[in-house]
Picture 1 (tube, one colour):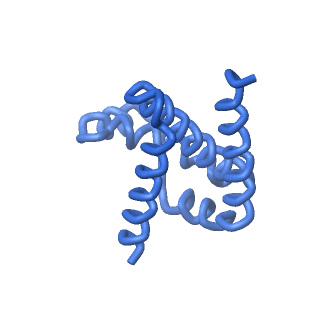
Picture 2 (cartoon, helix red, strand yellow):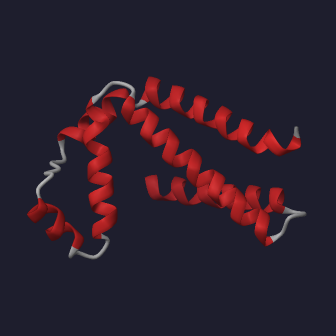
Length: 120
């Protein structure tokens, strides 16, 4: 049972994050999609890949084009954030298996503080 507790936690976080984003950010995803043009032509993709961070720009542009569909924007964002949190949890568990909960709490608090200062 303990083996699947991490998976269950990630599923619960995904579901709550999806519901939150679906309710409170529905129109934000439509606006983000409308402000970006992604062309699936070789010239456009090669041009983007030649820039620094080009692969990330191509992948994000490919994902953002699906934000026009009602639930897909919230689902993509919730999946990316949940997988990032799961990856972070695995890394912290490998660093120090005994106290990864404390490290997680400290990093979470720092992330909230940085996000709060960035918004203002």
